[in-house]
Amino acid sequence: MNQVETSLNTGARSQTQKKKIRKRWESPIAGYLFISPWLIGFLLLTLWPMIQSVYYSFTDYSLLEAPHWVGAANYEKIFNEDKLFFKSLGVTLWFVAFSVPLKLAFALLVAMFLNQKIKGLSIYRTAIYFPSLIGSSIAVAILWGNIFGGDGLINHILSFIGVTGPNWIGSPKTALGTLVLLVIWQFGSSMVIFLAGLKQISAELYEAASVDGASKVRQFFSITLPMLSPVILFNLVLQVIGSFQMFTQAFVITKGGPVNSTYMFALYLYEKAFARMEMGYASALAWILLIIIGIVTAIIFASSRYWVFYAEGGRKG
Image (cartoon, rainbow, N blue to C red; front, side, top):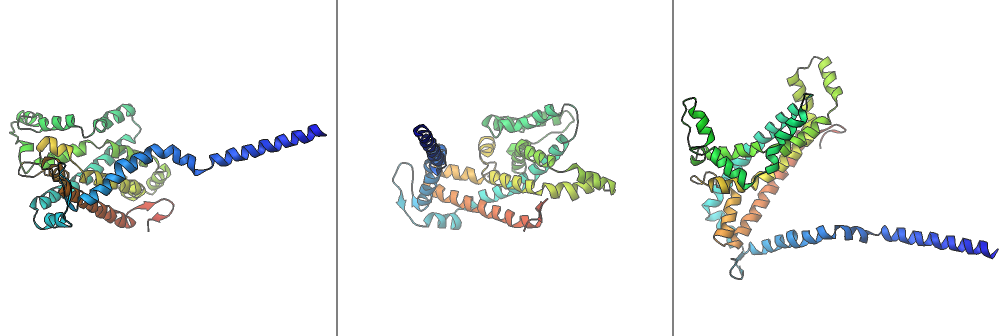
């Protein structure tokens, strides 16, 4: 009898210990411990610098001297006196307006091609995605500048057919266009996302449309685009945010020239912060850029209720 009681007591203690262990691991503390490296990095390297930037935007501050509080003087100067602010903002808006739609359209076109059943498709996918692997690196920017220079590859090709090409990156009329082409060429990430979205569209929809006599063009506008609209929204937001921050290409290829025709907002911000050491003024520019990006993104999301469709619930909103 004593052995049975001892065995029952041992089993009860074992169950109690298991419950305690399970309860301990169900505690949120374990989760916080796992994310602590990221959380510490976010607090120290992202959130705290952002808070400092807000404060610096209201100061006269260089890296060599202590910040001096000036209130809203930086913002007043930006909007009332700084002509380069409006110039750089205008150039950036033009760049976003042209580069984003063209890049997304080209990425979608290539994704539709890669969604077909053709031989060697994996090789094509790798080759097409390769430009995005090297990204907006300095080496690619230098290469692009050489291709579109006065004695570059493009003009050499044109010379074979008797055409004398201009200095593409040296002319105010064409310099911004060369940067737009460079961004379009790096379409791989958007293309992969579009390709994933295309594979989620049911083939039965196209089969039913074909039976009803719908042409390929009609199928594209009536099936592909509506079903792909959530993916288009995702890609659109990502590309708009990235395009507003475009810096490397303009800095390496054109230095903002000629005649400030490629003077991007991020390039102007960089020069204010690190060339002229006006860190407070640059912080104000950075927050203005953040607000502009937020407003444009909000407009995109607000408009999405009219053109984004979902398979379960139809149109959003």
